[in-house]
Length: 143
Image (cartoon, rainbow, N blue to C red; front, top):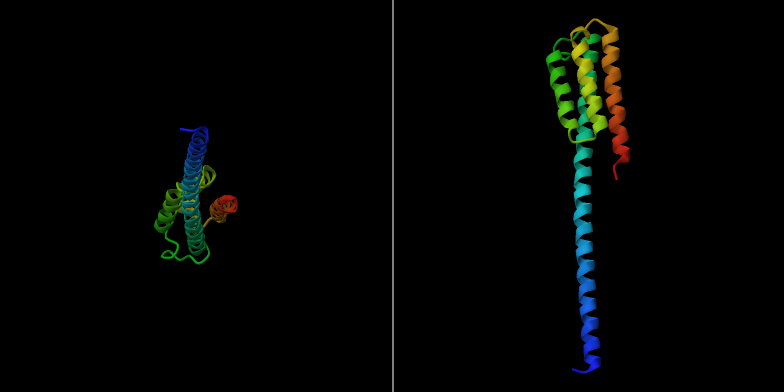
């Protein structure tokens, strides 16, 4: 084989190897980006659901305390909503999970007196607001 043909074959081999490397790099980046996008979508959905559940819990507390409505303000419903916040927080960050666990702790301390104790209501609402703040901060940080 002449030298010109060998150079041409070597150039083709280099081009093929470079093309293969760029294709693998592009595919790897695309897979990584899709995983991040899916994770962010799941986190975003969990955050929106958490915000809804937290608002329902706050409404429940207000119904129990201010309206003296034992049906709308049932502590059993409150326990379900608090449990749901803890369950959904698994799909978020450690800070959000910590704030929902703190909410559960505050709820377990004060749930029995929400119908007649203003301090219990304020403690629960403050904990709900703390969880909301963490969720909003997380939503702002998502890319």
